[in-house]
Length: 323
Ligand code: NAP
Image (cartoon, rainbow, N blue to C red; front, top):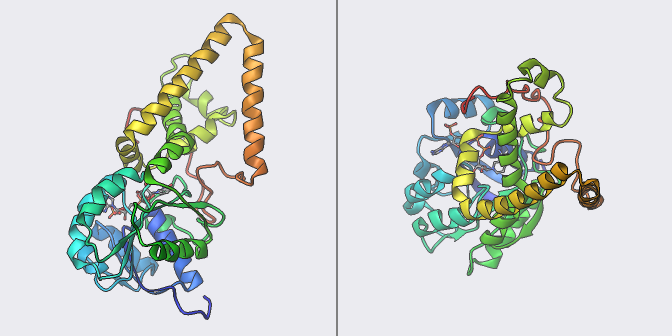
């Protein structure tokens, strides 16, 4: 806690899962807000938020949560943001900053903006930080430290509101970048969404191999497969919504990926070692470039381990679509 005046008098959090609870922990620790009012969809989560002491007040409805708040952050799956914006629109205080943390931005702007009054500042954001854990118990104050938070203000957004939100995320520990929602979705399609799709695919593929046993997959999973299983353990609701909401950019990147995969397939089939070597040398240089700009960490790039939660167990190779 610092002695400086809080940046916002009242923070309203709608949704208190991994991201919402991490914001609560970090904002409290840094003394960034005078008060936190929270709500969640289910009574069970609201009860848990009270037990964990994540908020000063926990209320039952989204409209109740945002009343009188000068910062509102919606921390729920992308597909649920439009209906929630419709619920809170008339309860928002004039001058409030309304933001979100969704992993896709174009659809958030399209779904939320029409429901928000012109008296508030809508400043969407995406903290590029996560783990494979979900729910109010999974958050921790350090989640955003040295991670990017991408702010995607729609055209015409008050620059002062953007600055205030950027300062908030900076104080949570994040490095802040601003870009258009469309550009964000294209960048994240290749850096995050496509890798998740590949992980979801490959873990399923391993399950379908008749002549490699389940125990062999688990036993030898350190050979690359293990990181895929961590990614493939990510929340099914969140990722379903990401692929539905960022369909166009993901399909574009998937097309490019399939062309590259076809080239490598052909090189393997033809025994073209030079083509394979050239490709792997190029990707090695890309990896070294990532390390040299400080984007590497001991954790897989999509997240970092929770300091006290155990790493999620390596899941059984898929027994079907559901966990
Ligand atoms: P989470 O841990 O699963 O928590 C989701 C929260 O949203 C819970 O409080 C849940 O309430 C609530 N919720 C779920 N469905 C809802 C609905 N239909 N209407 C209202 N509330 C609903 O999820 P999270 O990881 O914090 O992700 C939240 C957002 O952050 C997503 O938009 C995601 O794209 C984005 N994000 C996630 C990550 C990541 O790695 N996890 C990283 C960056 C951004 P109940 O518990 O009561 O069901």
